[in-house]
Image (cartoon, rainbow, N blue to C red; front, side):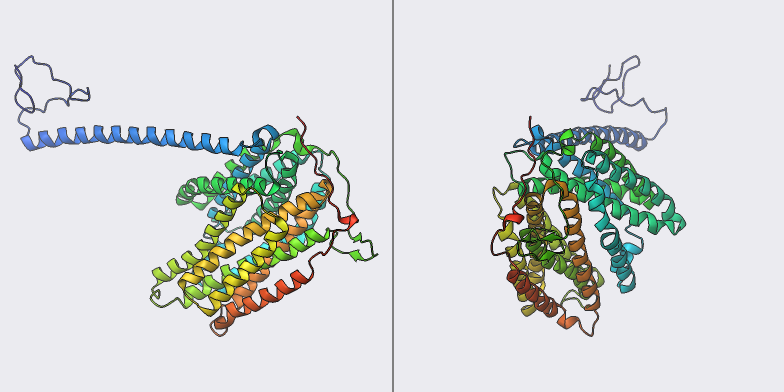
Length: 496
């Protein structure tokens, strides 16, 4: 006869299972100390409880992940996006952002990012120079090249993923060896990413459902990019913890999946219905030649976008160095100064995310008005931050810059998509993105130069004067009337 608990059992009695149905541990050998017996039994029960807890957490996490994926896919296909094929492009952009975030994490300890964290301006200027190369030299060639792929744009987009996958695999071998091919491969990834952005932007209007506007469609695509980057960053970070080369190999896998997804895009992406070529430079009704070849309202939106983009580059570089070397009162320690930089620069990232959400849910945004509002809002925030220098207004400045930069950019994309013939979308987007990237780099150079202790007291004031002067120029160049030769060509519609 046996007793409950740890009491003695009569010979021949069978051990009873516990409350969860698991058999108890085997009896201790004769002569074992009582505390050892209780310790072993307790550790076994604790291990089983931990296993059940991990199993439960995994079950709940799996359900939450599946629910999140289902919700995201349902949102991506809402308002006719699944019918028109826009949903597939949205999902493709999530893979693009996931691969780009992994690539950036893999390069976190290289010359591209070391300068900003060490306070050395030389590596940062080198980074800006390397960033400028693909946009200033190669990007003007991307648009005309992709225009020739009007009947094979899916393969062109897929090629940008496949090329980045190959280069990430090459980078994985050069990160540890210090080979000079590292710079060639990194530059190639930047160029390929630029080509994807141009091709993707020209594909959006071909898959646009009638239920939503171009601004909202662009916002929805960008929001998918944020989700993809956020989901990929922890995985890339875990791979980076093993070794930077493994983050590159993870990016390789993501870009391979993106290659397949690009080739499986709807056939409407390759549609050429209603396309016409555009000559550059163009001749206006008065006989004047326009060197840009862009309609007046597109050129105006592009000029207005240069202001927020220049301020974004300036703020990123200027505040990174100034707040790290001359922090605000009470933030003098290294830990607090790093946190201070993160608050201001992170506010800009938060503003950009808010802009994506606003653009994706807003019922209507007037692009012509939005680009002006973005420019003026940046000037107002910059003036207040200059006059009342402090943490709160610096965070407000960062938030405003990030928000207005995105809203201005998505408005420019919409203006190009409706104001330029479909046949020349790739060239127009390449020209616009090249100009904006150069504006960001110029702003970054100014931010680094004006961050030196001898002149950093006048940095924000100089930026306010420069941006105010640019706003005057932009407003004076606003188109006053719509000419016949600038009327937008109809965008190709999707027929079911």
